[in-house]
Length: 389
Ligand SMILES: C[S@@+](CC[C@H](N)C(=O)[O-])C[C@H]1O[C@@H](n2cnc3c(N)ncnc32)[C@H](O)[C@@H]1O
Image (cartoon, rainbow, N blue to C red; front, side, top):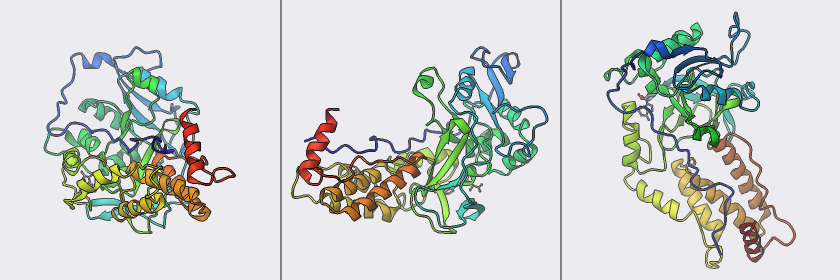
């Protein structure tokens, strides 16, 4: 029998793409630069120019007092990108916010950082930005200067308070801050737009850009095009006053690879897994054990999953997709063993984790216990029937 399918598509660990290149950057302008720079293009403007535009559209005289969600100053190279955003169903939507403020910015071991101001449960929304300045694709130094000039004064002030770890490589005070604080927001681009060259953006955020890095992060984010905002959610239960960490790199790669990705931020990560020389080997074993043979009667799926869940939780490795696979195995195994309390527990944990990872509540009731679906054999037949759907 094939391995049990999981409700989570495989390979879905957050693929946070590499940032701007490491080291010295070429910020020279193309020839005829001014001739093809356009402010506030309409969506019929030809592609291939450099566009500076404000989204959602901003009318004369409007200030943050009229629109607390604010505006994003965007720099595009394709009008396709502006078209893509404004044709997103529901755009512009209000930004979803947590019911009460759950974060603060303050001193951390790594300069400033962000902290929880109350206990936060796995999956819960920690923060959505009030506004999302400066999504952009490639960024030339001059373009960056232009769009910072277009920001609301208080947002410009917030921008210049951000850390700049690129003071020695020719980036300058603006592009340097974009390189240090830019968060890749690739994930929400519809496939057909990707094909048309709309590869997503990098965004710099007033508050979210204060999140420091860990390879065992306790929050992650999802970008929503319809509100041009990031939702930062808890990947596990977080205690009041804990520092919040996101990952700046692809965490399911070996330590040396991760350290390479982090070089552009000018620090060496010293988190729990980076400091443990056995962690790469553990990662391989976590991956290898995350699919099981449901025909193997010598294996107790729940006990197997629980061992690995405990191991991953001890490290704080919930951002790995394998953590979701183990929750899924535990939930399914508990159902097959007729342990409805445990089944419900893992069902809820899995849903909360999915919400944390993907930013939305996903109801997965595929494996709800019911007549005729209570033994391992029933489960096997059920899974086989799914394979043929
Ligand atoms: C996006 S900023 C985060 C906020 C920053 N700590 C501040 O004081 O404004 C990224 C910078 O924070 C620092 N940083 C973030 N995570 C770190 C970590 N795990 N270890 C050391 N430095 C870190 C590095 O200087 C990095 O370039």
